[in-house]
Image 1: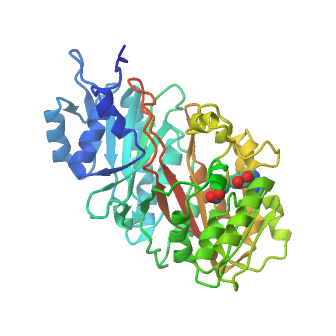
Image 2 (image 1 turned 120 degrees about the horizontal axis):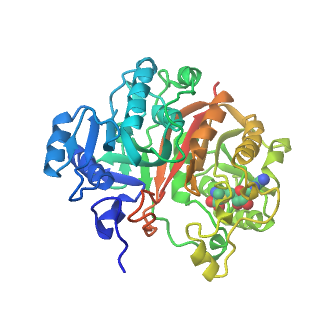
Amino acid sequence: MPVKNRFNNLTSKQWLPFQKSWFKYIDNYDLYEKNLTFFTQLTDEITPRVYYQGNEHDLLKSLCKEHRRVLTKNAKGELQFAMLDLRNRFQTVEDYLTNKPELLELCFYIFDALQHRKILCIHIDQIVGESYYPIAWDLAKVLGNTFSLKDEKIACLETNNNPNSTTDNNLFYSLYFRKDEKSQGAKSVFNTRLIAEKNSLGGMPKPSISSWHVIRPPRRKPNEVLHPAKYPEQLVDLFIEQFSEPGQNVFDPMSGTGSSQVSALQLGRNAYGTELSEMFAQIAQERCAEAATDSSLQFEIKNQDARQAPENNWPKMDYIITSPPYWDMLNMKGAEGQAKRKAKGLQLNYSDDTNDLGNIEDYKEFVNELMSVYKPMLGMIKPGGYLTIVVKNIKKKGSNYPLAWDLSSALIKEGLQLLPEVFWCQDDINIAPYGYGNTWVSNTFHHYCLNFRKCE
Ligand SMILES: C[S@@+](CC[C@H](N)C(=O)[O-])C[C@H]1O[C@@H](n2cnc3c(N)ncnc32)[C@H](O)[C@@H]1O
């Protein structure tokens, strides 16, 4: 029997594509229409009321007319959907900070006006004037104290011809906040002034790398398949070429199958690392031996807890690229891809070792332990060197855990300079109809590649 759609007027076929967490829209019309039709429901009795603020008021007005929605300025308790388009709205970080209280007031007003379980959507980019500052993350954190932060999408408009990449200025976030039983109502507690001041790029050159990359990796070899969460060498190549030079030293404290080192060696860099699991450390070491065709290059993977890595007598590193366990998600029943691995008799998690960070259940403890890997490791990087961390924001049991943003804040506090994030977008996984007919849950197919620079 077909599932009844109580959420919007879309068929399951129309519903599914919007669930992808990264999205290329044709233009603003396409962006607004897709959001408007996904988040409102028209019935015989109800005409959805919508609030909008942004630079395209006339466009939204005509869209509402076309779809029999009412664009309204004042609708206490009646709103089905609200959309704020804040792209290009702020000229400087100061401009954002000065206008933030007023913006929050507006969102508190919207909170009161929204119907239960309805959505406020905010489109926002992270380039303010000429510099980069993570205002989308900041706003998401602050408003997460009022609404429930339901989901995020990264998006761009189709202005360039390369379907696999997008340029810096074009990428934006669509943040989805829901008024629901978990949300706490109007309150503002987050003071980000300090982070703002530290974080402005202040004349530093932006990396020339594009903001997102759709990578379709080749079929994995049998020894690589043994690992449940390997990243592709093609992804690593991009960053190694951007952030290091031939002959320099590259490190990964959680090497897995050694993808970072294989890429480094193939690009003429020395490659070092640690890995907790004996089996993966051995696979990594073997793969390195195969990749190191230039005998002048050095490589070594130690079978060791990453927290001990700085105690070794490594040379100073020019660049570190790494990806941690995505919290304990591999231990969750029904996690993405787990059924297929189970059917093939493959290992579902990294190990059952209590030192494996992927076995920590408490989120705060997990972030703290991960920082106890990263903090001492920063001392291994040469001044002016770079660090890239590949990670996801995590959705678990209906709640959001912004791991990428939390790690960024913690590393900024350690004195690192945050550079614009780059996304690894996956296009080779089937979309699952989570929440169909009831609620909005995206399929998270984008990974953050967080980039940092160690000050000279
Ligand atoms: C996301 S995977 C890295 C995959 C790797 N980038 C690759 O492409 O093969 C995370 C790795 O961290 C390792 N790990 C977990 N806890 C660790 C610890 N305390 N010290 C070192 N490695 C650890 C896991 O065994 C796993 O291989």
